[in-house]
Each structure stands twice: as C-alpha cells, then as structure tokens.
Image 1: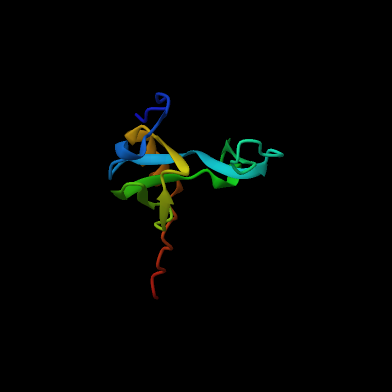
Image 2 (image 1 turned 30 degrees about the vertical axis):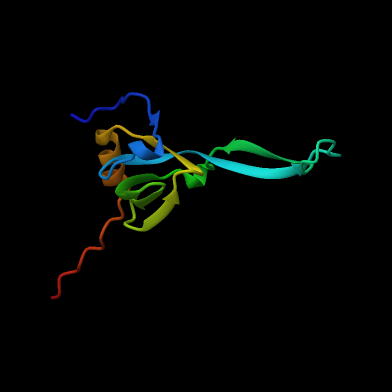
Length: 118
C-alpha cells in the first residue's frame, strides 16, 4: 500500500545538502539596491533590500541531488534533465524519500512503445 501522508518538509542549509536526496525549491532570495537619499556620514546613499520569492505554480519541480560542491548543487529533474543551482540564492527543502520516489515514478515521461511489425 502506498503511503499518502508525509511529514513536513524542512529547509536545508547548503552544507546539509547530500547526493541522493529528493528536494524542491522552497523559495528564491532576491535582492536589489535602492537610494536612501542623502548621505551625511560619507557612506554611499544606497541600501540593499532582500526578499523571498516563492516559485510560481509552473516552476514547482522535484529534483534528485546528483552532486554537491557548496554552494553549487547539480540536480536531476523528473524528465532526466540536469540543472545547476546556487544554494546561496535558491533555498531548497528536503522531501521525504518515499514521496520523492513517488513523484519521479508518477511524473516520469513514459517511453513510447514500439509497435510490432507484421
């Protein structure tokens, strides 16, 4: 019987990411600089704002971690494509291993069947 409920995901620090794990993007960390006005203490009048950006619905993917060289992570998608992520800007969450395997089995593209020659 297939388990239908899994525990909550947890965010992974870059140094906690290991090959073989199933992960998904929790959020992206974006930043921008803005002008704060006049500077009275000699420092540049700019500040950096950092905010979290959640993945769009069409960006939700489950990955299998193939290799890690902190902060870079090589991932395999369900469609057997490879992506390289920077774990400083992309915060990953760890999925239950059984759930990750289930997603790979359920979404994996089916190989076309060869027709028998008559």
